[in-house]
Each structure stands twice: as C-alpha cells, then as structure tokens.
Length: 450
Image 1: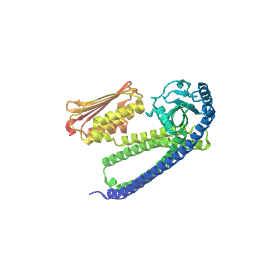
Image 2 (image 1 turned 180 degrees about the vertical axis):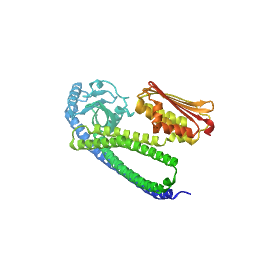
Image 3 (image 1 turned 90 degrees about the horizontal axis):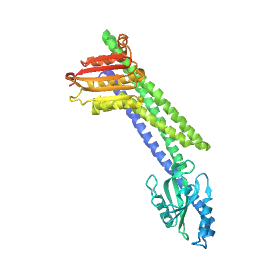
Image 4 (image 1 turned 30 degrees about the vertical axis):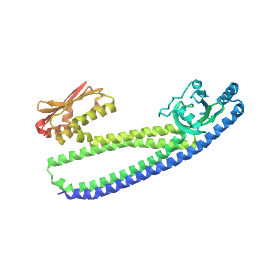
C-alpha cells in the first residue's frame, strides 16, 4: 500500500498535469490552425495582386511592339527591332521580358544573354517542372500563369516565380514576364513564425507552472518524511543526504543547461524575430536573413531539449539494450565534442538486468562528461565485451590525467558514486591515470546479472 505522502502527491500532481497537458494541446492546435488560415488568406491576396500586375506589364510590352508586327508577320527587320525593344524594357531590380518560339528556342532574355539562341524545351526547374513547355502551353491557350523556380538576377538565388505569357501569333512568339514570390513567402512565414513564437511562449509558461506546482507538492512530500529521517541511524542519514545531494546536483545541472543553453537560444530567437518584424515594417534591411537565423537557432533549441531529455532517461537503453545505447551515446559525444572516438562493443549473449544496464550506462555517461570537462583529450576509446564470466567495460583517453589516489582520499562524489554502484552489484571498479592516459576498467560478474 502506498504511503500517505505518495498518495497525496499522486492525487495532487496527476490531475493537475493532465489539465495542463490538455490545455496546452488545445491551445497549440487551435493556434496552428489559425496561423495556417491567415497565411493562406494573405498568400491568395498577394497572388491576386501579382496576377493583375503581370497582366499590366505584358500588355505594356505587347503594346510597345504592336506597331512592328501589325502588318509584317514575317518581316525579319521588324522582329529584330521588336527584340531590341524588349531587351531594353525592364522594371525593378528583377523585372524583365522574355520571348520563346513554339519550339522552345529563346529569342529574348535581357538578364541571361547566354540563353538566347538555344533550345530550352526540355528544361526543368529543381522541382521537376517543365518550365518552357508549361509557358508555351499556357500561351497556346490564349494566355496563362505558371509557378516555377528560377534564379533571381539580383542575388543569383533560386526563388519561386509567377510567370505570365501571351502569344504573338503573327510571329509564333510567346511573350511573357514574371514576378518573384519570395516576399510573399516572407510574409506568410512571418505569420506562422509569430504564431509559433506565441505558442512557444504559452508552452513555456504552462511548463513553468507545472514545474512550480510539482516542486511545491514535492516539498510537501519531503516534509512528511522529516519524522522518518529523524528516526534513521547515522548510516541511513548519510545515505539519504548523499541522495539529496545527487538530486540537487542533477537539478542544478539541468537548470544550468536550461539557462545557459535553451534560455539563451530562445532569447536570441525572440530578438531575431523582433528585428525581422521591425525590418518588415520599415522596409529596411533583409528580414529574411533574420528569420533564417531565428529558425536555425530554433532548431538548435529543439536539439538541446532532445539532448537533455536523452540524458535524463535514455530510451534506447530500455528499448534496444545497453550495446545500442552506448553506441548512440558515443556517437553523440563524438559529434558534440569533435573528439576521435574509438568504439569496440561486442554482442552480449546473456541478458542484463535493468539495474546492471542502467548502472553501466550512467557510469559511461559520467566518465565521458569528466573527459569532456577536464581531460583536454583528443582521443577516447571505449570497449564492452565478455571476459570469461565477466562483463568488462573499459573507457580510456589520452588527456592530461590526474592523481586518482588523491581524488579517492578527498571523497570525490563522482568517482565514489561510480565505485559504490558497481560494488553494490558485486563488480570491481579500477581507475588508473597518468599524463597522456587515463583508463577506467569495470568488471561485472555475469552471474549477478541474470
């Protein structure tokens, strides 16, 4: 039967967390749907405006050359004069007119003269859209629009473009122009980003509320244990105190990582989005670059949350076992630190108990953390395998080393905790260190890991 303090914690915390989770889910879903509707409406209005603008541009160009083809259907001189006229007609930084014949040969392209005279019938954009075929097909139906990807002349970047074409029937031409839609994308992305930021802020507040509530309830539960702690003998008191210290260190570590990592990333993301908003409103600078930086930092924050979650409880250890969990831990360690990591993990024929697997994983995790913080090493080697009737884990590095005996006399809690966890399972713990090499060797009897 559960103790009174545990029943109080369960009856208080579980309903509260369930309500907070349900509220967070509802807010997140409704906000996301609203953002999508707003972005779609804005995009449709922008596109309608762009279509009218394109029609006006093409009508202007067609009018400019109309007197040349009005009575000279095959007059080469008239065609050349029309080409020259269209070559000189530009609007804005990226606006120009292009001409193709029915076979896909380019006749006019002011921004890419190298295209003129070549056949582009089979050209496709990065998304596989047959651009020239589509434009010619739209013109053969009287006129039409086509969305595709094309290089933007002002920055040589691939961007989405809306093209509009009409036929010049006497000469068999397809005359058209286009407008780039990256400003539409920026506007819709800003709507979604603003809503995502609001959702994120709400989730943080709800999470903070849940943490505070859980801590308050936990503190109440700890107060119920005061009487039991007073009745414990000295060894029990020492053990309890050490457990509390370890818990506080872990909480401090998580709090430090949240403050130094995720909190700073979120503040940076907020500033970048505010700067992008300011630039969008003022029309100055490049808000797209600020949005990209914000999204990049947001990806970093998500990765940091996943890393902290994995450190708190490695799901691979529960699902796939110690070998796979260690391989993933070492791969992440090498990627994060840039150190060379040598791995030799052999299959374990006998199944490990949950306590044994978790103990070995935590010791490896703690050892790698110490190497990263203190060893100044460039190479780490880890091996796991069966040696006779024992399971042996060896972790070594080529760092500066330390005085292992001195650390043991000073009762360093990290090494002492490793040693006691292994000895509790009937294993042995050995650490040897000198400048240029530190080796940690753990032997765990397989008969004690059923």
